[in-house]
Amino acid sequence: MKPLTRSPHYFALLLLALATALCAQPSPYAVFPAAEPPYYRKQYAASTTPGELVYAANFTLWVPPGVNVLRGVIVHQHGCGEGSCKSGLTGAYDLHWQALAKQHDCALLSPAYEQPDKADCQLWCDPRKGSAVAFQRALSDLGAQSGHPELATVPWALWGHSGGANWAGAMTLLQPDRVAAAWLRSGAPSVVAAPGKPTPYAIADAATQVPLMCNLGTLEGVTVREGRFAGVWGGVETFFTTMRAQGALIAVAVDPLTSHECGNQRYLAIPWFDACLTARLPAKRGSPLRSISASAGLLAPLHAGEPKIVAPVPADKFSGPKEKSIWLPNEASARAWTQYVTDTAVTDTTPPPAPTHVRVTGRQLTWIAEADLESGLAHFIIERDGQVIATHPEKSNNPRGRPIVQGRQYSDTPNQPLVPMTFNDATAAAGQHYTYRVIAVNTVGLRSP
Image (cartoon, rainbow, N blue to C red; front, side, top):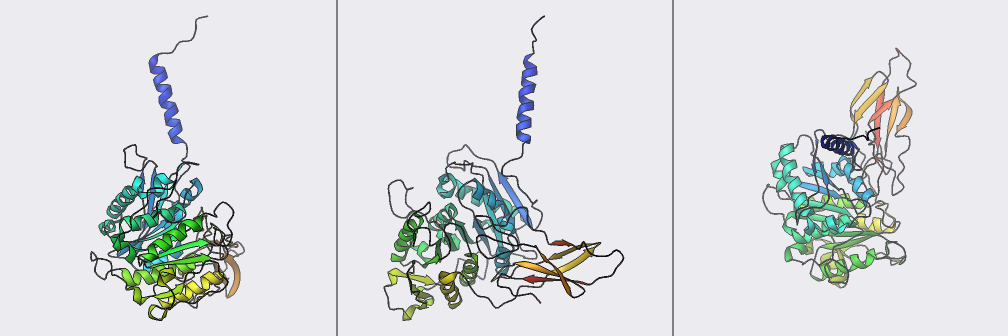
């Protein structure tokens, strides 16, 4: 029997088939839901060019419907690790952060850097290694895609968790003229040389004029000095004291309930950003960011696990050493800060907006809802003929903070799949006429009209 032989063309076709099959496998960073207006997405392959990003990346943008000209972009940046990077895929769909963006005619952007499991996080969370270039390229491309070319030049409000906090703080130091405010959860960039740390960033005078909030859990080295995240406080404290010594508008908010998870931080972060954007965004697009006088804010002693919390007071009435004080932009954010560092129970007296566009098709009920700016959304109440028949979703548990309608992943982004605003009334009788109402409930229990 003659041995089986194959031509070189056969093996070439076989290799092509294998490559095609591998490419057809679903990516671990499969993107869903689809980005249809008002959502937009750009995806970039990993680069081998020196100075460019070595990881592939997705950037998802939400633009408030009806906005004519964007005044800024709010960036929600995930942390390190494959799981956190995947969680960035849903950040732009967060109804609560959308409420903040809409309030200020801003877009909401959520990057997702495709860092493989156990790969080096510094290759993206250090913006000098390509992520800054990729970020600004995405703003330009998404601006063209969405019909908002101004996106390439508007100011940034940066929120970051863990490695994302390093990134947000570093971007502030690198390009302070572009940053309206930055929130750093559980991380901070290096500003002092230390063994094993990246090259420290310089602190320009302009960076000291950017409102900054350093936020971390008390179990990250503040009151508990052992464990995986016990070293976080040391880096944050160094960043805070170095910046504050140069007059920076910076504060620290220690979450008394958590470790590295985000907990209830958004109920302080969103009102804080609201105050900063109100003060900083220019009335005319293209004008520089407005400055804030340090004397216009409120000061309080740095609180890092001490039993007594001293409430903030106007800057001209503060008697302690200012280089050891925290700075807050207004009275509302100062009240929220005091509540947050006590027990994270930031209060709210405003009900959420009422759901709109309620429709019934057969037994299927659909609606549209926006979140309460202060407290987000916890769930919906479904009424039929004046009687409550369901809550939606049935469970809105959030192990990392208040129960919230979209749930929460580790980097404080909505769960996948997204919770739909639909309800199937399985008990409705065929041919029967019913009247339905949908009521929104925020995370402090207040109901919409």
